[in-house]
Length: 248
Image 1 (cartoon, one colour):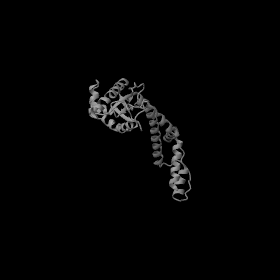
Image 2 (cartoon, one colour):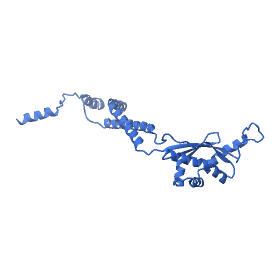
Image 3 (cartoon, helix red, strand yellow):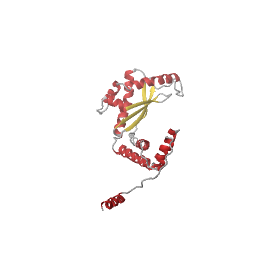
Image 4 (cartoon, one colour):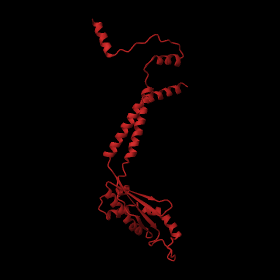
């Protein structure tokens, strides 16, 4: 019970210093906003997508006048998506990309700049390329889309991929997320200010009022001690006046 009362009082002390929390929230939020918006290098992401085919030709039944897709071929292509993605992550593929472009990135650097996403229950692969500039991201994404079919045909010797969405030109940066970073900064400011106030109040053992003495001895130690009197506060001016009067 005593611990619950202490926790309650600590919370009340923290709430009385709400202005400290507000200042910390705004200060950290502004700091994170300024830092991420002005000092963190911007990165841009270009998007494209390809269609996976388990044949070198279109997945269409030649006898079907309505050009209805052959379900067997579609099912096979869905199973090939993961295999094709794995091929497009190999050193061989990125070396092919390097040969077709003027970029000086290493194979590992290119691999870290590209992310493939297979669209669920489909035969479509999304390609996301992140670079230091919008044009660079778009050019590299174009190269990957163009080289994908070359590598698939060369390595798998069956099947192909066809570009659905051409590489986009990013209009805004994808990293850093300034809004998200600012929100994280505000949360961090709130956490640190609350933690600081909690520690200050928790370890504060100073006696500040008559109530503190009565609580310390009469409540906690179950004693019955009466407070006879208190020493009034003396500000600096009164102290100096009293000191001069004593010399005289």
